Length: 181
View 1 (spheres, rainbow, N blue to C red):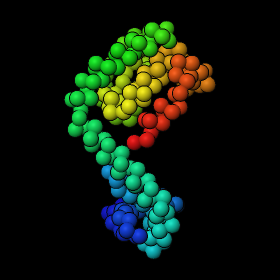
View 2 (cartoon, rainbow, N blue to C red; view 1 turned 180 degrees about the horizontal axis):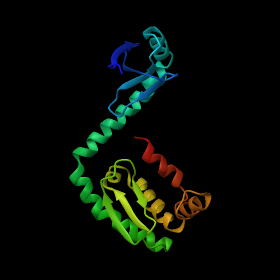
View 3 (cartoon, rainbow, N blue to C red; view 1 turned 60 degrees about the vertical axis):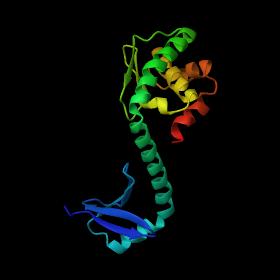
């Protein structure tokens, strides 16, 4: 396997990694770098042409990835503050909404999950990431209702979203708050 090389096209810095594959692919990485996966037989000129063709798409996705990376760095700097806020606020919100929804979790835990804001186990135990506290309260409340709704419906079916909508009619707008970063 060859060592990856770094190239520049249209002010885009990217790394090429060649392998036994038939097609070329683009990857925007979490560290705000661009990786082009290319077959061994593809010339550098063909790769440059491919990258140039998708330059605007790459720039758009790279900008979003860097914005998210910056946001995550800020969250990590505020970890202790956000952990305390989560320990205090989330169990309180779970109690509030579990009374309204008449759904009782078996437990409520605060975790360090990076890739999900909340989860519901098969035994109806709820987990919430402390990172959720970096988002607006409307979004936090949505995640609490979402996870409680899993006690009634352990899936993402239309019936599940009917439960969510019953208690939070504007859930789609609140959901967007979690994706805007």
